Length: 124
Image (tube, rainbow, N blue to C red; front, side, top):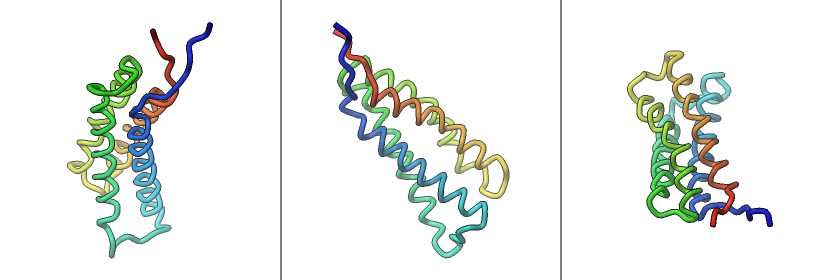
């Protein structure tokens, strides 16, 4: 019998982290392309960034409490490297090419954490 596939109980946290990250990238890209002018509400981008960091940290915490245990650890460890670029972003300045490049460096790890959390194979 083939192993059953299901998501970890922390999958919603990984989805929230990925959603907040995607919203922040979309807003940042729109501002960079001059589609949106956020000069009067710059705080929105910062708030979404904080939500991304908090949601990512909460998702990573599933390494300690998530079930199934193996899948939760795998998803959390896949997400963990995103912490480095997310932590560096505030110190890089916003008007250079480094800012979007470092921000996008978190993308593969956020996606990997989401995929690992949503599509896991139960081990018995």
